Length: 173
Image 1 (spheres, rainbow, N blue to C red):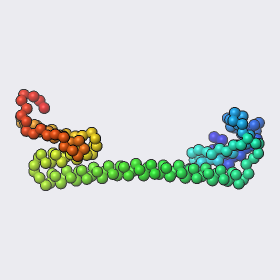
Image 2 (image 1 turned 45 degrees about the vertical axis):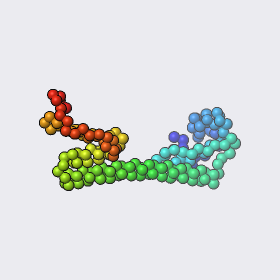
Image 3 (image 1 turned 90 degrees about the vertical axis):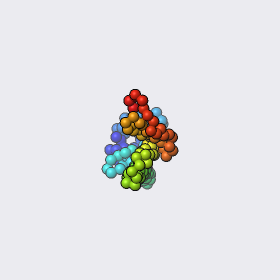
Image 4 (image 1 turned 180 degrees about the vertical axis):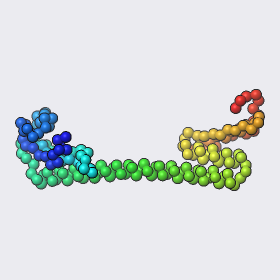
């Protein structure tokens, strides 16, 4: 609260000064400083932190020193915002990459559906693309027609197995 209410607050001495917050005076005594200056890190009108400067001597900070520390605080805010924007951009890029992959897979499935009437080809395409989208998890499809079944499995783009047209005797599948 100290840095937030006093944008360029500079106090000397710290000890016994009623303008200095109690906790700052305690820290001054504990760590041996008797002058303190706080420069707030402001973003869109709100304090997001502060740069505190202290020294052992009970000497006030001059305007040049205050301006320099405030400049450092302003630069820190810019750096923090740049990191936030970069992370936001990385997240958005990953989301778009995932969306492009999903659209590509849907396009390939659509193409398979319109280019062939062979159910195995269509199901193979669906399962392999679904497996690519879920990554290392793998994917399989199974279907039952009468007393026969067919299964195909994929792990990523690699086909890992097929059981085709096996008769299922007396078991629910």
